[in-house]
Image (cartoon, rainbow, N blue to C red):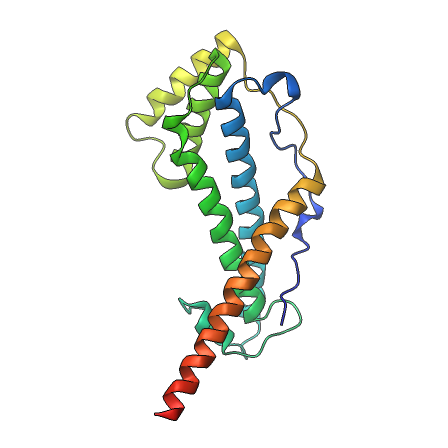
Length: 199
């Protein structure tokens, strides 16, 4: 049973996708990829939250708090919003966030070749902290202050428009990976049940 692709992508935003003139600095390319990955994970998070809301509204569906897609899959699926779709959306979000974290982890290995590249790296550091920590703790306000100073001197990161086509393609990549994972977990769960019945 294939989960339907989310339709939350109708809304667009001006996402950072660097213009050709700004692509010479490896740090700019890394930050652009990271911003895209974060945006995709936020889109998938919204899909997952919408499906979660639908499950909460329907009291006949159990498994909302299940920690495993295997447990969620044991329930009856609705057309859209059932446990199957919810499990797929959860895993797709994890795939997208993992991609963003991998890009984040590679930051120390990428050298900036311009002042705007240094600004990009600092943007990534400050942006990552917003996701995981308290931005009022040392050294985050200090780093943000340095970033603001650098932007005042050298300018901000170049901004462009992200195509809806690319956004849909990136979401589809994670969605399809999640469908395969959830299907594999469901199959594994069924096989385990079959082994227990034989014993």
